[in-house]
Image (cartoon, rainbow, N blue to C red; front, side, top):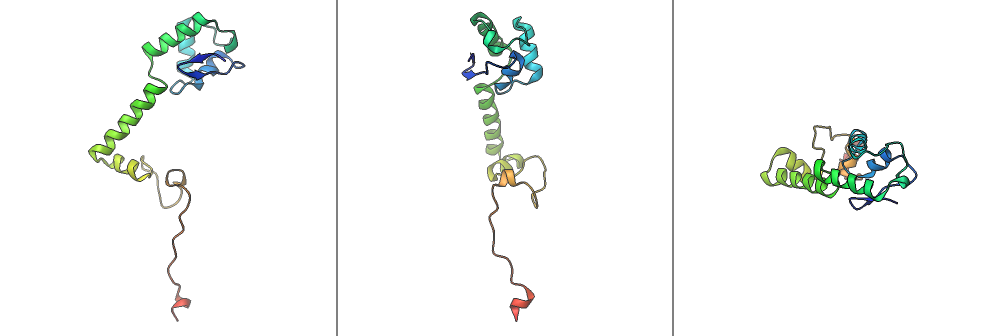
Length: 127
């Protein structure tokens, strides 16, 4: 398996699809990277030579933010929002949706599994 930026990319897929296994690399960036490096996007990743991999790694380092560097940058942005106490930072801190979604129903992905709370006593129970 070829290795780029510390990530194993699959052998049996075309190069442009294999490159998308890198965090921060989508279809557009993968095709652009193949074009700049002079690599056939339809050739399988196992057919890449060491010099082609080195060219792609150099281009990724120079022109694009991806993998560890991008993860670190996103984490720093979220930490900054939390530190300044912005609304978005507070939502991140509490583990609630950040972009205006409703929370009365849905939002289970952010909030986690249901925590059942004892309900109110009904009218029949009051007697």
